[in-house]
Length: 222
Image (cartoon, rainbow, N blue to C red; front, top):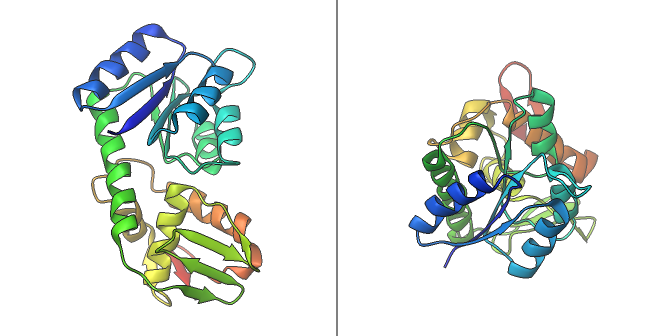
């Protein structure tokens, strides 16, 4: 059974999300503060996390995600009342897989969760050889990345994007092509999401990653 943790301090919103998620047959756990959310996620080991940005308890949603990403790559969707580009970019840079502003449609939330989980299952089912990019080794079978023999923790979407690059070595891919292949053609969001995740890959893998920017178009690996 798919397990979802909802970290949301507004009871009406938490209950509404729980109602729609349980209709899908999913198991739902609700936390109402940052510290409680982090504890619930670690205890329940969910398949997906819905995380409100504005949380009480001295730890907001960004803090929770930052702590969570130190030990987990569970998919995270940020839910927030702040429709600010800086906040969206920060959320994605922290390793979130999606970002939705309030007010929202519960059906859209369910659809976004299904899309992320479907991409994860497809990636796990894909048979792929180990790819070596100089000091970087990408093992998509095991969903592992190493740089100079040191494991590098990548968020779900960062790994999905890297997989598209690996499968198209030497090919220039537009931002739209990357969105369609790494996020899915049904994904709804800002195309600049690609740029944010590319920056994350470069930050984590450094100059060892042979990823080239093709100005005004997209990117090429190798």
